[in-house]
Length: 88
Image (cartoon, rainbow, N blue to C red; front, side):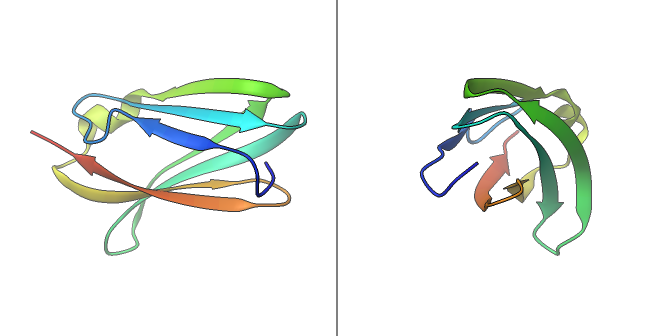
């Protein structure tokens, strides 16, 4: 992931799962970390990115309580965070 890399999350707010789209300019490994607003890590998932568009489902999100969370995608060169909300 570079500064130009796009990380998108949908739907937001989510109910059952989070779909993460990552556009990478090279093949690499990244880590997705989901934390609640108190900073407690609720999920950590390592993913392998291919050059181009990548789509990952976070099915474990169905188990989360309603509220706001921070999804952070960490790669060798860049970190990007997106606020997500768990709806009803």
